[in-house]
Amino acid sequence: MTLIGQTATLDDQTAQAVSILRRAQYLIILTGAGVSQESGIPTFRDAQTGLWARYDPMELATPQAFCRKPELVWEWYTYRRRLVAEAKPNPGHRALVELERHVPRVVVLTQNVDGLHQKAGSSDVVELHGSIWRDKCYSACQGEPTLVNTAALAGSPPGCPHCGAPVRPDIVWFGEPLPPDALGRANQASIECDVMLVVGTSGAVYPAAELPVITARAGHPVIEVNQSTSGITPVADLFLLGPGGSVLPRLLEALDLPPTSGQSLSSPWPRPGIGRATKET
Ligand SMILES: [Zn+2]
Image (cartoon, rainbow, N blue to C red; front, side, top):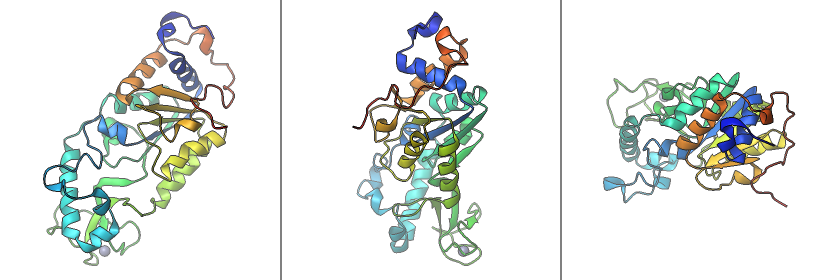
């Protein structure tokens, strides 16, 4: 493929990604902790500083921990909410919003609980692991989830106004299943989309890590943007190395340029397997 004009400066993987995104009608974006980290939100483990340094997050973000010490877990989330409240969307978040100008249908599937995609302006976000900004009744007394507005409630944690059970964050804890509606939508979208863009996820947390595999099996390209190879890389057709905050704006800039002869809109889809970053044999 000969590239002319400004896109000649793009590396081959980026040029191929641009070519795929130009033809896309339905784009799924799967995001993970790396995207939030670029907004200054520490990862689970990095957040354990000061008073919290002696606690293992694996022993705080579980239903068992909440049953044992609801006050402690509630306080930890109060601390985490404070950290998240200070964070702003980064250039990566904003570039993902801008992709909506280029692709008719865009859905963000995120493992992040901070709400930054919505804050940036993404119009359709599926929260696979819940949201740190919502609370629900621990006993799910009115069905799962029984959301509770805790703004005016006293207590640490407050009691559910319906049944009195403690209120907890509406977040998927270790050992808990994903919300069935969100997971169902994510699975369906992963089959139906015509390209998936994966950004800043290690591919180590299931079932979210399975979603790119579903897209690849359905014969659609998977484009990965990451600071290092991940559990997703073996199924990725294209791998763009670097933080989302710099790779995605560059991708967007290339998309805004007029198509080159090598990126004709009538080109057929690349065959599955072409340009795979790594291949399992
Ligand atoms: Zn209740």
